[in-house]
Length: 103
Image (cartoon, rainbow, N blue to C red; front, side):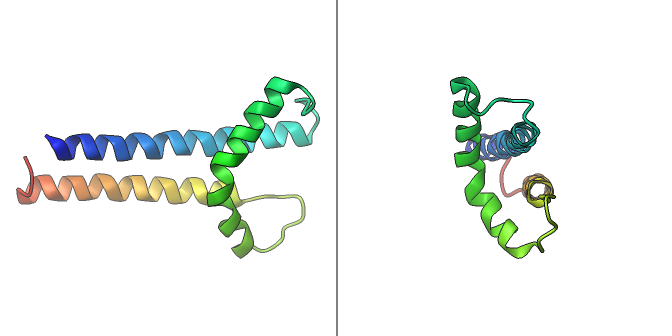
């Protein structure tokens, strides 16, 4: 029962972070094309929040990826990594269920 809650919280955290990375990439793209005005207080607050949440995970990926000019592939790489971790968590939970480590 306790492990179900732990696995649920880990999966929910990964899902929320996946959406935060996606929204941060969309907001940054819209701000770079001047669709969203960064001087607007609400837009700036949302963009700043998403930047602060996602940047610690994106910075190491950006440092390792080659410079492609104006194209930033680090959110795509991070989304793939989050999905891989989510699949691994599900596989670990399934393995633990099948082996009888928890019920």
